[in-house]
Every structure is written in C-alpha cells, then in structure tokens.
Length: 112
Length: 117
Image 1: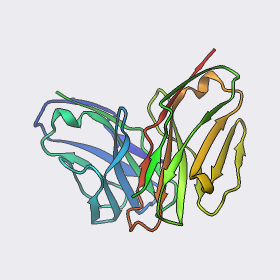
Image 2 (image 1 turned 180 degrees about the vertical axis):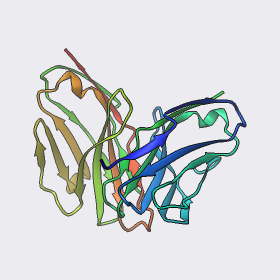
Image 3 (image 1 turned 120 degrees about the vertical axis):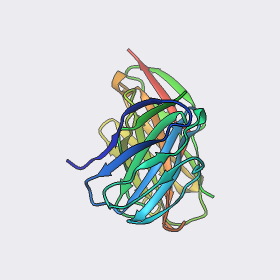
Image 4 (image 1 turned 60 degrees about the horizontal axis):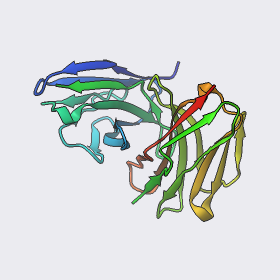
C-alpha cells in the first residue's frame, strides 16, 4: 500500500529536550515536505527536499532541522523544542512539482 | 506571492442540505494546480481533488462537485445532500509550478463543516 508514515503519532516533551519525528514514504517520491498546522493558520511549510541531500527552508523554518540521507526518509529534528512549537505536524511527499501531495497521518506534539 | 482565502470559517447545516465551500486564490503564474483536502476529526488529511489551471471543466464525483472559474479566481466545492460523515475541516490549496523547485502547497485556513442529524 502506497503511504507516508510518521512516528511518533503523539509526543509530550519538555522545553529543550531534543526530539526527532521520523517520516518515511514507499512511493519512490523525490519531493518531500514538512508542514505544521495551527488553529486559525492552516498548514504552513517548514522545510522541503527535492532529492537526497537537497533540502531548503519553507515559510517557518526557525527552530527546526531536517536531513535527507535516503530517498524514502525525511526526519524532522527539533534541537531545543519550545512551547511555541506545540503543533500538529505533517510530512508529505509527491513525485514532482504540481502533482498531488500525499500526507502522513500527523504527529501531535506538546512542548511543556 | 500565492495566496488562498477561505472566507467562511465555520458552516453548520442539517443533514441532506446542500452546502458550498468557497475558495478564492491569488497567483501570478499561468500554470498552477488547485486542490481540496478533507480533515476529519481523526486528524488525517484526505486528498479530494486536483485541478490544473488549464482545465476549467467542472467536476462531479458522487455527492461532491467542484466549480473552477478562472475569471473570478475561485474554486468552490459543493456537497449535495450532506451527511453527518461529511463533518470535517476542508482545506483549499494552491501549488504554483513555476515558483522554483519547491512549488509548495499554500493552504487556506480551512472551513469547519458541521452536519447535524
């Protein structure tokens, strides 16, 4: 089954404790992105990747890092989480620009 | 810069009513794609439709229909004979193809639809 998976689905952590949210897709897509969803703001892109070892900032990259060492994986790293990073996070992938983005199930993060 | 406006924030209807969700977009590109996604209470994002800027033909899929009008920069979504299972947040999104390699999805803020029995 073609899918995008994320782990963990739910996470409660404390300020400053480094965490990683994993994302994996099995569709051989080159393009992957991370979005965060906040009430009243819709979804905003954090980072994206066009291929292995090629990543760039989206609209709200502050406080986040990503890496793309393999085509299928695109982890999101919060080196020092803060309460304003409490949000619902989605990973997405697509084959090429303009095509449909397929989203993972989301990760709900609470930073205390 | 690309922008998507969903002016309606919350809509409440009674089951079997028809409901239209509005979407207005802004873009300078001539080549772009429009999308609708559904987010049920469980939280996942479900893809509904993708339409390219050169195809203004309206589309119908069961109880769902979409009206794309370039003249008014609108891509409205109508649910006919709504059902309780249609209760969700609906997002309209735009992707420009010529904005560089990113061609990110720009989302509207979403419309919360509640369908009452």
